[in-house]
Length: 614
Ligand code: ADP
Ligand code: ZN
Image 1 (tube, rainbow, N blue to C red):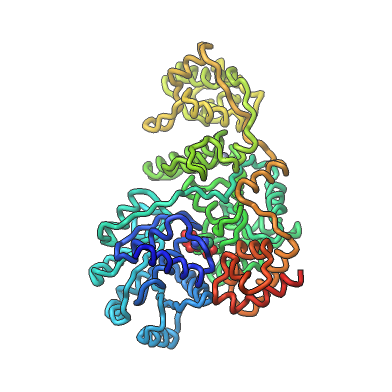
Image 2: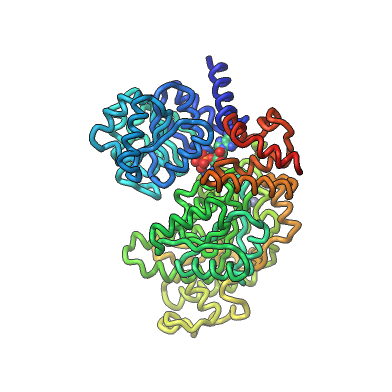
């Protein structure tokens, strides 16, 4: 039975979606759910969550409902399914009375396999009775972390979902999310009243993404350098402020690129319009605040740049995660300046709630440590989420080969003297004042800054005042952070995060131990050679750029004809394969990953023609 069910799933996968293989855990999740079990699927962005419930719904009779928080996305999903020949619909407040009545009539006739609804719908009069009449056989809860106050996007309406289990005790539920903390997972299970669910947690490693952090120096020039590597491809530039997004979009347009700003200050209509221009490949670059992203399913975003520091590592992971959902190589670049860190510290000092301040400081510290670290970015990022990095062969290396620190290790030098300057400054301050101070003040004293605090405590009279004025402040901050990583300095969270010299730090001061430090972040990015290597590591395949371009143009033409986003027709990954395999017949075309039976019938001939003419 297992064998035949596998066979069925694979044939559905090929027929409807055009794929030959499952992504990790997809098949296990679907199979368990078909056995009637409740399931929790924790897959990273781009892991293929939608396919889990979509294919599941096709493999058994009855109606599937999909609970989704974003009304705007429902139409996209339904359009995508229709393109694949799957009958799906949605009920939400955006529908006219007639459209909604018609949709219900067709549901009564069992014409649909999937129905998307917003959570608040369920509590409406008669909805649950209707679902029963429509032979509900499977429930998918997308973005399931929205049910938990511990998640990053709590939505009170999600709490009503417990109604589902009360009303449909025997219908299996599948909860899906890309948020992996244990607390959120437990909340999901408890609040949805799942029956000993099978939990599946995929690796959060995104092997096709490369990571790079460069010192922000001439930001516009640095942005353009990244953009030039991706001609005509889509990218997102995240900025801290609304004004920043406007300024950057304008500056890029002035340089001949096509870019739009996006932020919460625009009215809803304008926001939707700009979002659609981006999704439909009419404008490739969007400079956005973090208001942009949630609800963007665009699979072919080729780069994400952080022009400013993200809020914390979790946001960094989510935001960079919007690149390369389709599995093709994509890059994540952060422009970093230690000066930002100083600004953010000051900003945090002004928060009123002490608890908020503590959390914000804690987050900022992890982020800074990550940015300044000279070890592999991927390994650090995964470690933050409690995961050990494993290579495809299952080994646990200390090198991923696709981040700046792996490809251009920062040169190290004998930093004993520099370390001694920092440590002795900390010791002197404590001797004089009887208390320790935070890193920023420590560096101020070291560099001979004339701040209010320095004057107030009389720290300008210390023998270590200004002993580091030969180097810029940012450099000292970077070294001080390294001393923390090395365990020579230690931050005391219970005492206003002051920095204290540890026992090994004291040994360094006594000249008993050498210290190896790394040059601070480089100003420029990677060399062309290094970048080529990076692409190879993330699985880049060279295809005929002329043919690939022609296929993309045809896709855009079709998209305009049928008024749907281009990626719903074929993904970039699929077009690349076409350009590589150059199929000559319909049968060969069907071998291309992403070409299913319905799309072959609809578009196969036109794409074959372009290939034949090439
Ligand atoms: P998530 O919701 O987990 O972020 P999606 O469901 O949007 O991910 O899927 C991301 C992309 O991966 C989509 O373009 C989808 O078509 C593709 N995809 C999903 N499953 C597979 C598979 N088994 N083989 C190839 N591509 C897949
Ligand atoms: Zn690495």
